[in-house]
Image 1 (tube, rainbow, N blue to C red):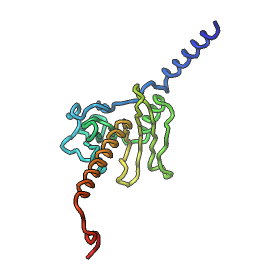
Image 2 (spheres, rainbow, N blue to C red):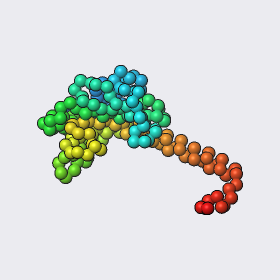
Image 3 (tube, one colour):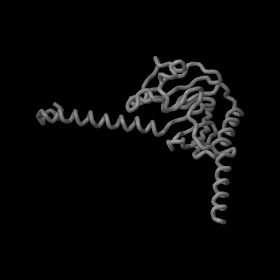
Image 4 (spheres, rainbow, N blue to C red):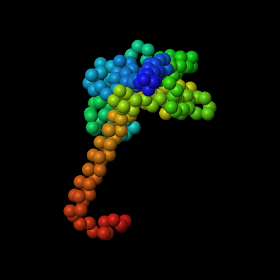
Length: 206
């Protein structure tokens, strides 16, 4: 009778650990009333779709700025433009409160909720502080949570305090779709070029 009792004790102990403060059973998916995986049309009242542009020149992702939301100074939503057009894969918000004490308060709350961050991406000068969590949702999808504080002059970083959540699996699906589409287009182009013969002199300067 000892083994069943021991198994039950272990199971109850594990359940207690997972449901206690500092542990979570599921990664976050929403912030500022916007949810990863939702369609961009569902939140068009919160997003300026008319100002949407490709993210970093990558046509498989679109980035649209957020309209004013209480508690947040600015932000943007990234959504797919290949496999699942319009599906939200990333949300980034900049808090109105730029105080370092507020950053530390959010950091403390995230550590309490999700445990120790998996990665540090700050710089040695202390002007850039980035903590990142890599979590799993109920479907075992990878969700990245990144808290950032920046006090420098580099336009590449959002000044003040900001938070970004990313559905890494959905983002990878969009990239894979884009890569596949690009390969297909390249093969089609090469096939068309092969039909005709080019004079070798055409490859040389004259």
